[in-house]
Structure formats: C-alpha cells, structure tokens
Length: 383
Image (cartoon, rainbow, N blue to C red; front, side):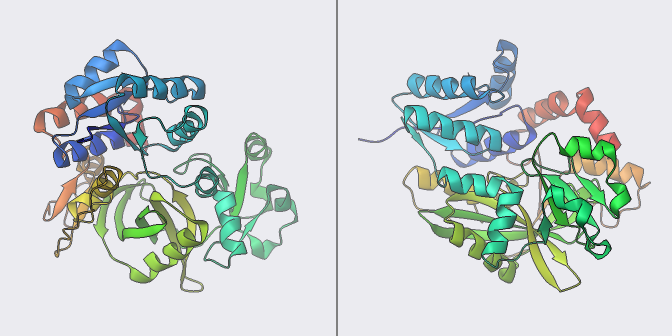
C-alpha cells in the first residue's frame, strides 16, 4: 500500500514559513501542503490559501491548550495521510511535544530529539552549563546573583534571556554601575544568563546540521557579510562557507547530547585566544534555510525525505553561493548608506529571501501584505 503524505508548516503567516512552504512546494509538487493558521480566522485562512494554494488549517500556536487540540484536529481530519511535521518555531515545537505526550504520535512523522535534549538546546544557560561541564567550547558564564560580586576584570558581561531569539531583552554591562535598577527589575521577571561579553562581536559563524537516528546526515556553515542591524542581527547577505573545524566542534556538542533533527549552532570568535565559542543554538529551522537548498545541501528537503522513508539527496553546487534579503532590508541599507555599498548590484549565484522558489504572484502578494504592515515598517527603519 502506497502511503499518502502531507506536509504541515505551522506559523504560516511568518516570513520564514513563507520560504519553507515555497521551497517544499517547489521540491515536492505532488505532496499537498497544510499551512498552520496562527490566528485561526477566516480572513487569514483565505489569505494563506490565496498565497500558497494549499489547505490552511487552524493551528493557534500562541496558546498551548488550543494548539494541542488543533494538532489533534488536524491529525483526525487527515487521518488517511501521514503528516510530516516541520519544526518551524520553538514555542510550537514545545506545544507539539505536549500533544504527543497527551495523544501519542497519531499519524504525524517527524525527526526530533528527546524532549529533555530539546530543552537543553533551547535554554541558553542549560546549553552553556552542558558545554562547560563537558569541556566543550563556550563562554565563561555566571549566575545573575553573582553580578554584584564580579571583579572589575570580569566585565564586560552580557545579560540575555535563557529562552528567546535575537537581541531582544539583552543588556551589556561594562562596569558595576551599568547594572541599573531598571535592568535589575527586568532581569527579575524571567530567567537570565550572564555571559562574558566577547570583545569581537562581529565574527559570528553559524553551523547547520541534520541528524537522523543519532547520526549526522549533513552539515554546512555560512559566513555573514551584512546583518540588520549592522551590529549583529538577522542575515541580510551571507555566503556558504564550509568551516570544517567549526562543524566538527559543533558535532562534538550534538553527539554528546544525542541530538536528532535540524539544528543551528551559533559561534562567536574570541580573538583573545583565537577560538570560536558556542553562544546559542536554534533547535528548529533557521531563517536562512534557503541557502541550504540553493547550495545543494538540501537539509530541509532531506528532513522531509527521511520522514517519508526516502533516501537523502545531495547535489552540491561547486561555485560560491549566497543568500540575500534584498527587498526591503538591503534596499533600505543602500538608501541609508547613500549608495555606498561595494558590490551591491552583484546578484551572481544568489538566492533571495521571500522571493526565490516562490511563484512570482505569491512572492509579490506576500511581500505586499506581510512586509508592509506598520509593525514591520517601524522595525526596518529602526534598524
């Protein structure tokens, strides 16, 4: 009997999900897509079905109880299909673990680690502790209550939420006096990690992995050329860069922990000792996933192939490959720099976030509707 598959991508309204759905629709044209409708409204359902020409189903990822029931409803509605679960956002993945705990796997297929391993990689403090205990490369770190007793030479330090992405909620303390009452108050509201602030904040390298049954299927790394904001943020322009020693360093961490599935590790170069230190992990699909497919590493599509009991496919490109968030982010950079960005109009061997792999109609529709809302416009101009 031939199994029928569908692919479920949650948080379908987001920028990252747009690229995931575009890539998978292009790569698996015969496998129907289920787009998770976070808001659960009819207007969003129509909007998603117009953009993606796939089924949109209610998947309210902002609430654990509703999300668990929505996962169950989707499984029941498509009970004659195997549903490939794509790990898009961390909060949704945590809800999915709760669903499996309550209802069992049902007809979902996926590659995820054990739940305790997942939380190890999601929590920056737990990951930092794990790496230190196992003599793996990580920054020096302290407890929040130790800040007042730090020696002057132990500054500067970086305070960051144990769970969260991007630079939101982070504070840099260069001396005791920087630890103000308002920062203390914010830090008291949730779990924070205190790490040494590595002086060179720009040489960040990401390493990206796909594991299956405890074995590394493939990995690659990339080098950021431009980010938004420029001090370090989302990728605006990156280049595939196979840093074998760094990939091996990350593999040590993943092997020791018993990882399974997709994960990104972020390393920062400590120039004082000439060594990269792991600063955080993204245990899910990452924002620049398109470079994986464009370069022929195929980590996302191979995740789906393995879920469908197919062999992984590798078709590495030999030339240098780039990923770029050209519109609107890099265009705004260009305007701000008054046109002074070297090589700005060079598009050779480049894939474009929210454009490549999508049909022209859906890309235009998505960019117009999702990027030109007030929240995003403010964010772009703030950077």
